Length: 139
Image (cartoon, rainbow, N blue to C red):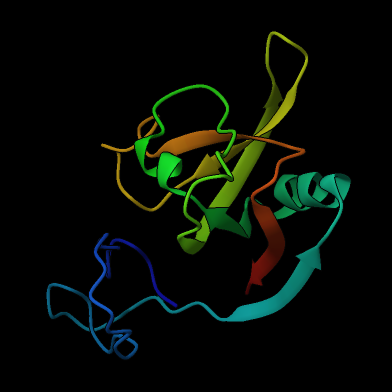
């Protein structure tokens, strides 16, 4: 794994998974490489919060429904009666409590700053779409 400055994420679906990069996007050699040291499945809310406090963020998988594509504000509560589109990976970076005393996750999406709240969204801690969360410790 390398930095996003070297190999920036491009939001597109081509159906082609491709191979790992051997050079940066600007054709210079990759100078920074990081090794994934451990991956820990985090099941409990407190485990996710503790991992974020200690290491930074948590990788999560969620179920994707069409209304998520149109998200623009507030906490995302999926319309699970819609067509199920598949799974989507996101990054939980923090949490908060809204004015109604409801806990939510602060989540980074990978679709750029033009989507959602400048690329982020709020997901209720107790929700219907979060499937699993993993703590990835990079050495």
